[in-house]
Amino acid sequence: MVRLNLTQLNISQSDSTFQGLARIPAMQRRRLSFIAKLALNNAIESLENNNVDYIVWVSQYGDEHKTFKILEDVLNDETPSPTQFSTSVHNAIAGLYSILCEDATLSTSLAGTWADAVIEAYSWLKTTHQANAKVLIVYYDEPLPNVYNEQQNFEALSLSAIFSLDDHNISLNLSERELVHCAALEAQDFYNFWQNASEMKLFAWQKY
Image (tube, rainbow, N blue to C red; front, side, top):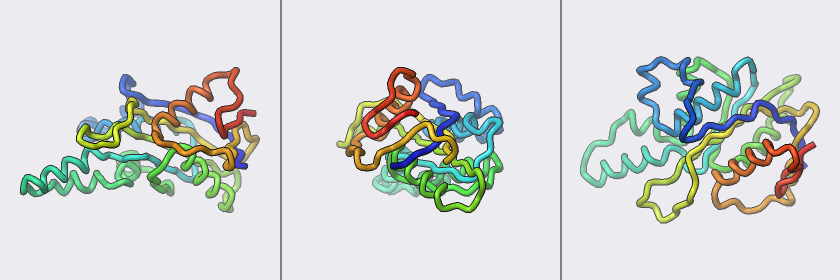
């Protein structure tokens, strides 16, 4: 059983205003992909007036639209953009955050789901020697380009929250976890569950 304290749950979606991005210079902000804007906005908003000791970035697909553009260039005998390549890798958004926000907080990038990131955060919190440690989780995803057969019906979104081991208010029962086909829908369901004061249990999740 994973027991944690959750605070600062935020969500950014297609119609969000991205107010957190105001701290990034306009020229650099314009160069960000849409999914990077979602993720960075959420991270910045969750960390407003808060400090963490570790960050877990997680996405099922990452910035796959950039990867697809690189593949198109190769097929058309064109030289892929080095910048496009460097920002297409799975940990690119974590790197962009660290550079643009001048934040050297340790982090890791996962290919997975919101629950996977929670388990990663819990593992780090249980093994660190830092007192009162906190972890920020930032989940982000957008639908794949239309050419892919693996199509999933969801809106692009980013979900973030800060977790610690103190005074747990949420638990995840690992034995009750179900196979997740669409990580974005799992994240959206978790957000709706947390916002609904009358709902205390969602699959393997339990509120306290």
